[in-house]
Image (tube, rainbow, N blue to C red; front, side, top):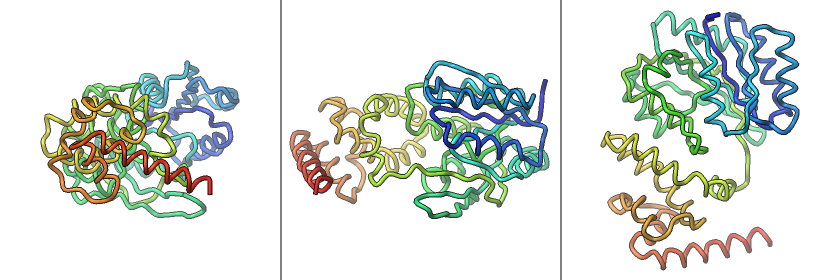
Length: 316
């Protein structure tokens, strides 16, 4: 049966915080929703928790599937969505009780295809208010700002569900990092009507780690670097403005991570990242990447030296 909003929650190893997430959704002031809990083959008790809640509330639908990653879980949720609008919520986050009411009211009033709200970010005991007001609501300008001030996530955005098909949204399961940004870019390359609600309605629990993304997820990144390079290149290369922003804002850290973990050989490294040769660089990481593009062997030497220093500091 159709409803106003479908809420999609991808779940994997979330038993510690899943109840808080679900309880926040069930306490919404707006009640015409479908809650889709996608158990992505979680080995803990997450699936049991989902079934427990579903037995008590008919609005909840649980999908148990083999583990395929967050992109696979999001796709599965969309396929089960019956709401006119939908929103993705991460299982370790929680939401304000007026999230659905405020976003849906704005969507109906403006006949919007996408509604963005502010959010709270929680990290290391600190709470930061993240304002997400676009300078312009024109779809390409919103996309441009996602390279700088706007968060390219799915969870603080209500989206017209039919647009997943209308915009031919692709879900690539080999995208583990930047998967939300890839989905958002696909939407915003189409002439969507965007609206904004100036309230922090979502609570984002940032996974804290004393090291950078490079250090924390490097080994896992090895399996996904190829997909990131391939899919974003195919999506953005036909749009010079956005491709230039990608090269400037995102490609440097991808190149450095690839170099640090020796993911690509010399030829592949140059093929993927030679665009950076035309960019002005700043910072040690970017300088090392530029050096590797001109002299791959020398770049590897500097990376090895940096790894050695890093390991000594860790063991000190």
